[in-house]
Length: 342
Length: 100
Image (tube, rainbow over the protein chains, first blue to last red):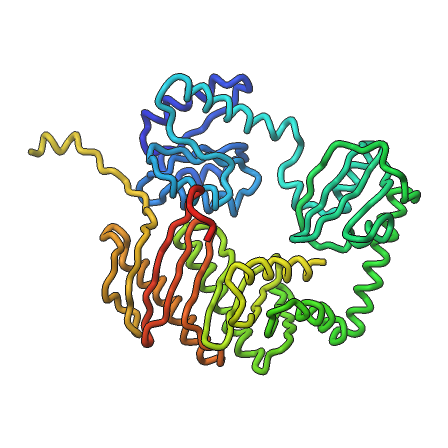
């Protein structure tokens, strides 16, 4: 996509020369590109940034949200580091300054070929949005041997898989089945596959499907207990979190269920309404300015400091003692989110 | 002159986030600032409106704040309360800028 038809023609030719011989469609405006994306499934969008009416950042922002499966490349002649940062903040795959010589053109072609090839060679994109069960099942059903390292905020866990069976797990002080159950209970996180360690001593002897079933049952039971006694269970995670040094109050709200829990607050309704409104206003402002997703809001007052953040479905408002340095509060906030997840 | 205009191609502009500061009064009107004129004043007013609302509603919720810092992946907005108004700093982040 580029507003200059000559540039479009040149790059259409360059892309058509790629070894995978992709079919190329072009658009001279953002609105035209949007119509084309509605009509047909594309694998890759290459988008110029400097465009009239709807600029490239606007287009990429919409495409990343509406068509997350499409790989995106921002492409510009504007040599400005800020646009690179903003484009990556929107979640694009690659940022390129328009090539100016033959060598750069060749590199650009190679990168495009690699982007187009990745989908075919490495399966589906966005595997990180799959649950841990899906990932373990994939590994085990393909009889793989690997070491999965799962990170959930400040917490890390490892699961050893040998010839399609889970043989060991470890997180913190836990090992074996208890460690596997603990990792299994994490709602979100990231994972990476490391080379297998065949010499790892086996501590788990159950078949993987039995192990997964058992963990799911344990989780279901704990959930149903939570539903029967919501007040008691709602308080417990906050009780643990409020033990973190420096926390004065804590308010957590599930964005989906609208259920809110708090600790240490005299007027949770008003503070809750304020934090919700703040997060929503600045989320919308971030979208308008095209600067990526809101990360965190920090407030300082005469009595205390406060952190507002969205973490997954949860919205948090945490009050801190005024004496804590800002850097420490940032670190402790990460700990709060990680502990909540676990 | 008209002939020359034939070769003029209007160049689309891409909004660059400026580094700078501006001051607003309690009603959100811009008083002074170091933002370039290319940055739309409507956007500056919108930023200010959100900041002032946050300060005001925090005070109403018995959580008075004198400073707010809003972090985005590519922009940091810092604001200091100023007798009902605010002084607001915009700091674009790039890969080579310091973390805070």
